[in-house]
Structure formats: structure tokens, C-alpha cells
Image 1 (cartoon, rainbow, N blue to C red):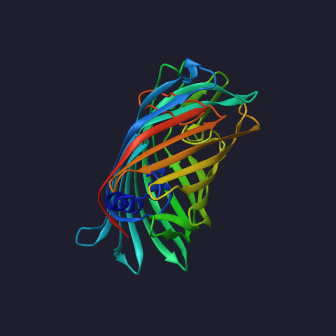
Image 2: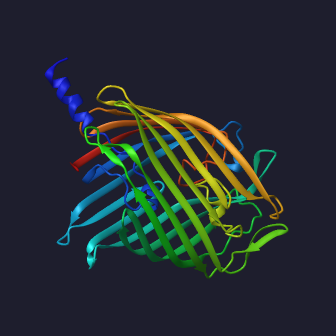
Image 3: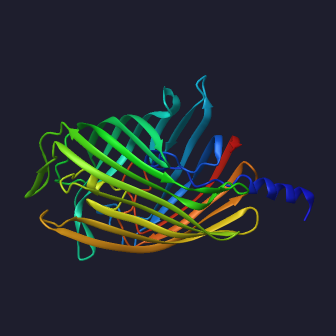
Length: 385
């Protein structure tokens, strides 16, 4: 091996990202494991889906669309040396600034603005193991949040108010379903988070430990009127509660292999009919989405991560009276090939026997059991911790 190739592989090893950045990474976790003090990252590629059985009325179609994001982080922004983050992707828009000196007494002040311009809702139920839609419609939301957090002997606690504007629109697949009226929501949000992640400084990736985040919300809204179809017309309650959780657990198996356990879940009000049918998570007022992954480093520049995938969905039946429970299983593989210090190829394939998966498009709700992606990641001006 020439000295030039050795230098290239060494540089690639130093450029390994902690994980693919996403809107959920920034909004669900308060203090994630991040190998960069500052970075400007662009990812662009193509994402596709293949349903087990095509059904155009439900959005179950074979298709390929664009995917990617732009992410910027500066850990020493301005004269106060706060942290500024900005993100724009198919899954949402985010801007956040947090500063541990604004209030003092080791209190972190966090200001966030969030937007999800391309949301899809799938109101329905499962019958015979298959999803039966009542109405498929679109929406968007915009939110502002101000939080105050403090570390209490290893437990990070953050509390703050938020305000969100929700807007909805019919689509070609909505049919006779009466969609909700636009409404404003406001409330309080509480985060509890504990982290013991140990980073692999050689690779810049989590190697050991966990990040556990619990989130509670109490929300009020000014929603008016009923929505739904047929005899199942409901009004959104004026006050609603929600609980969500997220776990990232890393267990080293050897120097080149690490087990990863990734779990997200939610539990809320049965009558929270809008959020319960948000297609970005398993449908229902109770849901769990979990992956068991084995990250393998094949040489200095190639990472392959096969995984098993499971979901649980608990929602009301077709009459909206009793609970129904569904379980789904699947798996896949994700991989990074680092071409240089600044460029990496990123790809994945996954299968889940739940057809209600996130849409691959922003202009219409298209999804299916099979998903695949290939893209290029570019990082500039990155400063490692």
C-alpha cells in the first residue's frame, strides 16, 4: 500500500460521523453524542420505496425521490460563545441556539424554532393485519420553544413553554373524510435526560454507554369543529397530554464491532387524533419503534451495520371504541464508505411488514414496506472534539 493511500484511509477514519443527522436527532435529544465542535454538512441522494402490494389510493406505490439535508453547527457562536445549530431537510427545518451563561447559575437557556412543511396524516385502523384508511390528508406545523435546563448530579432537566401553529389540507386521497380545521396549540414541555456515552476518539463514533431521554408535554389548543368520516366524527380535546421516550445504547463487542440498541416510543391521549395518526411514527396513541444493530468497521474507511427492526402500534379500532394492537418485524443494513476526509457515500436498505412507513416524497404521501437510499455526504470546516 502506498503512503498516499495510507494517508487517505487515515484521514477517512478521522471523518466518521456519529450518525446520520436528522430533524428528530435535534428535537428529541437535548445533549446528543456529537463528535464535532463545528461542522457544515450537506447530504444529497435518492430514496426509493417498493410496496408488497401496490395500492395507489393509499399511496402504496413504487417510486424514487430525492432526499438529503443541510446541517450547520458552531459551538462558539458570537461573543457569548454559545452553540448555534441549523438544519434543513425533507423531514423538517430547525434552528436552535443555547447558552449556559445567559441566565447564569449553570442554567442552559435554549431557544428553538421548528417547522415541518411536508407532513402526512393517515387516519384509520388495522383490520385483518392490514391498514384500513378513513382519510389521508396533508399538513404543516411551525413551532417556537424556549427552555431552561440544568444538570442535577448527572440528570439533565429542562422545562419550557412552546407555541405551535398547525395547518391542514386535503389531498387527492382524502376522499369524503372531513379534515381538521387549522388550530394553534401551546403548552409546557419537560425533558429528563441521562447520558453516559463514551466516544471512540479514533473514529469519532459512540463506543460505549447510553443516552436516555424522556419527554412530557401538556398542551392546550383552540381547535374547533369535528373531523373524521361517517359515524366516527370527533372533536379534538382542548387539553392533551403526551409522553415520549428515546434510548440510544452502545455496547462494545470488540475493537471493530459495537452493538447499538435504538428505541423510540410514545404514549398519549386516545383522543389526540391528529398526532396519533402522524405518519412519521407508528400509528396510534401507544407505539414503539426499535432497532438492534451491529456496527462493524471493515478496515479504516468502510462501516457496515446490519439491523433487526420491530414496531408496536396500539390504536383504536374501526369504531373508535376499543384498543387494537399490531406488531411488525423487519430488518436491513446501513453502510458508510468514506472516500476522503470530506466525502462519504451513505446507503441503506430496510424492510418492515408495516406498509405505514414515512413518505419518501414531499409533494404526496408515497410509502411501502421496502425502502432504500444512496447518497453523498460532504463535510466542510469540521472541527473535532
